[in-house]
Length: 98
Image 1 (cartoon, rainbow, N blue to C red):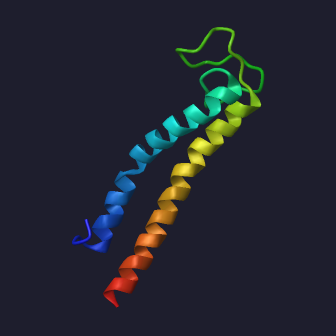
Image 2 (image 1 turned 180 degrees about the vertical axis):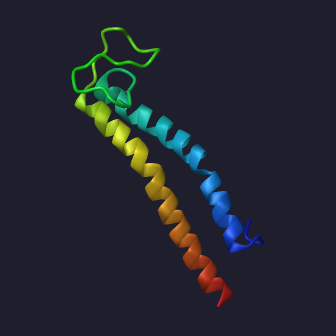
């Protein structure tokens, strides 16, 4: 990984975004399950108190505010991690090549 060029390494980093998403999904699911008492749900268009539209959830499951926090953190944590990693690696490559 260290021997490849900077541009190719950044492409590899962007290619890891789906794995970062799955990684954060599993971690956040473990964190939020005790808070909610059920598996968390990431609402798309549902409003607070509306019935969950996803499959695999109980029919009486309602959208809670914590579900919104779960969904927002699931969007931003992988992106923030990707930005931080690319910034750190860019700094590393600039320092090591000059």
